[in-house]
Length: 154
Image (cartoon, rainbow, N blue to C red; front, side, top):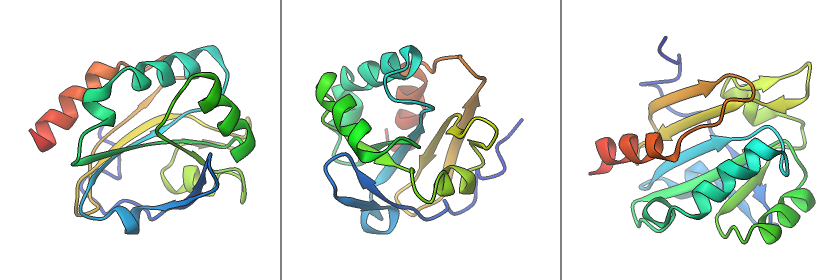
């Protein structure tokens, strides 16, 4: 089933990263975005996914792509998570208002208070070109990111 956001402008976001800086899609226009929602920092599956991204310089160090990881955790938890796992990319807090951006992307679980494993590839013009939401507990494969980024950007 195709995600309803594919082919449409990505919902705007402006969130604070683990270093206290505001990151917004508007400020990143002109660069493709890989937007990765994770349920909880420090959980096993989320940590493994973060480490996989950390160990993927072919994604993190591209000039034409920005990887943004979003969680409903506070910036303090995200800072500790980044420091613990030496992750230098942006970890964005959707803590307050709790889950607003996750809701905009259709990945917020209000019963559990978390973002589900949604991934969105947004082109340089701000249009969602690929999206997938993995079932609870099912990790994503960084090679899927590589395939979709290569298809979009070469």
